[in-house]
Amino acid sequence: MADDRCDLLCLDLPKAEALRAARLGDEAARRPAERAKAFGDPTRLTLAAALAATDELCVCDLAWVAERPENLVSHHLRALRAAGLVASRRDGKMVMYTVTEAGRALLAAVMDGAEPAR
Image 1 (cartoon, rainbow, N blue to C red):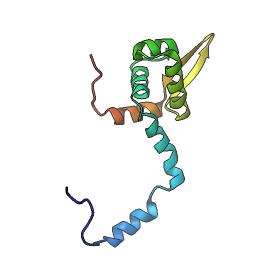
Image 2 (cartoon, one colour):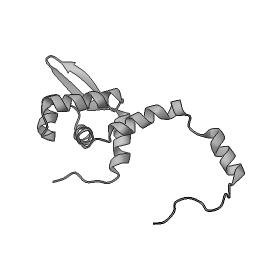
Image 3 (cartoon, one colour):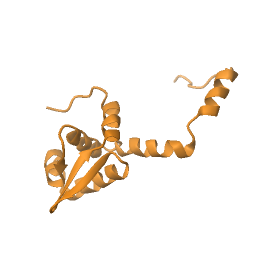
Image 4 (cartoon, rainbow, N blue to C red):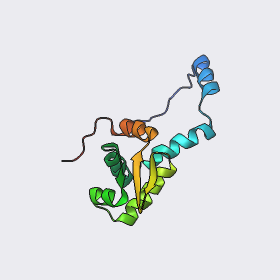
């Protein structure tokens, strides 16, 4: 097994100091990390991909598309909404969901050319 650590301390101090001074702070990293984590579940990723392929869908449509129970889909949509990746609106007795711009951008980065199953 290859060791993934340096055998010698050879710090490029000017580069390392500049990067350390400009690094992302813990608080600034928290929201993007939460968003990325929201796509860590295959069902949430599937729901977001389905939403990105159309304008908006209700929970029952998404449950049918994902072949998952409505209560599970609703749970995952709440997590995606909390992360700012989907938005919802009430239309009478239905709740309609759509992917946000942040959701589309992150989904594009995560999918990186992956094709949906046919």
